[in-house]
Image (cartoon, rainbow, N blue to C red; front, top):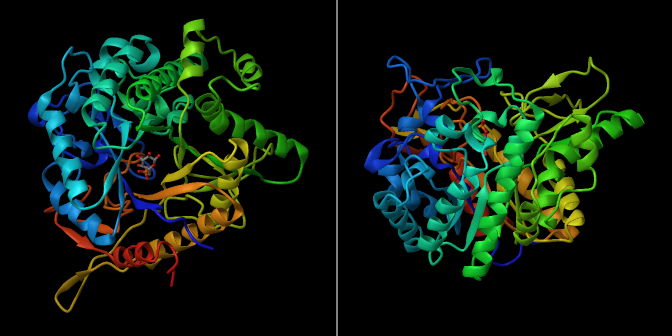
Length: 482
Ligand code: BGP
């Protein structure tokens, strides 16, 4: 049992949760720049107009913009060979509508990529990770408008033209399937024109949600086709928020309900991105929800021509599905789901399920003829305590080490099962702002950052116990899990 030689080990971040410097060097405002922090019981508030008394966590985040050299050196110390990061669309096109890119924004990423390479780390870049220019919300109601396809294409083409020599792997959209749920209206598709209120209160019709998602799928395929035609060495991937579920019981009604949910939430988007067309179940799904989509013959051609080279996904937890309306619910990434009596959960209620990772790696591999797969997000949000031992700051995080160990074991089993797994990037290897709740105290990092929900903290970094564990794990290519 061994991971293949050259397996990619590293961590994953997103510009809007990490960089800060939200208006530096010509950067424009993005959707998260209009969002306040919340917590497990308080959904994030979106402000159309900023409130001078409110705190917007992405504005400073943990200031990667001014700490990138220090952070990348720490990543290298752990032995990473890959760093998944994203580009802030609004650093390159501040409103998303300019004819020409902002050179200062491009120059920043040149510096970051050069720094990565100097440390033997290859950047893996998500072109759009939850940072739609807010000006596109104001003008177009986000991805509802087809105009976004060409505006995104201009941005993505600029990124490819500039960085194709420094970056080998690109992902078009982070967790593209989140757009099909109300939860995605904010961060993913930006269907919030004129909206002030909490994330939980944005409801759009199924037709609006699925049309916005369709426009993103076309935009993604169009850019992939351009990359394939222009830069044969660039590898283009998708990114699915893997919302993995099991039937709660063997009641066929539960099994059927789970199949329907798995199809809608996970396979709907990835079938399009792998196979180049909507799956056979789509027609009935649209009919049952009264969805009427504007899909042109040109769209169909683009989707068919712009299929992906590798499949990536985020995996945090699993839930159950039941037709029993009283089945107990738990929270999870981007959505609620049924409780599983066999699993424990994090303090945020996400059920921990390493075996599920093996199960779903196998399912994806079976469905897509063993195409290369990568787990680009996996991790555990937890409260951490800093203690001083012998005058040194220590963060003992055995819970995070356990989570990591068990998921790596599950991946190793999946590799043995025959899955063509190319890499693994832990989510939030350094504490960043949470996407779902906007909190800092929900920490995922191997590296602690002194930043708190009230905005205080001097931003200094400190190694947690898990830092040393991951370092050892990487040095042994995933063998040393003791
Ligand atoms: C994924 C997002 C990330 C990240 C992660 C953890 O859905 O792609 O941006 O934040 O979830 O979620 P959270 O930050 O809500 O704990």
